[in-house]
Image (cartoon, rainbow, N blue to C red; front, top):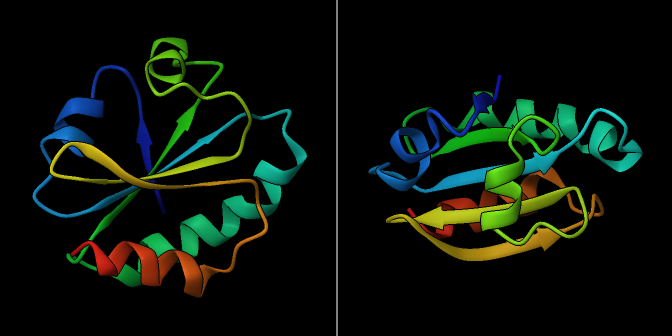
Length: 106
């Protein structure tokens, strides 16, 4: 299961992480977000210690959504060493593509 990221734990889990992190910005009312949600959760279970996967509910974490310029969701950001290294907008991506991008940063 993906980590539930909030404004409280974001720095600890993402910015200060020693491994790459995929962050899914999503919302309850977003159809494509619901399609990609299970893929994100499956990916989280497959990575072990190589990388982390987390989700930010933009309705509950508006400051994070503003900070990372979230204009459309789902927005997937790939972090390494506290910086955004890559991004994917939308749900037209496979689990294998996400995994490959994330592990390329490891």
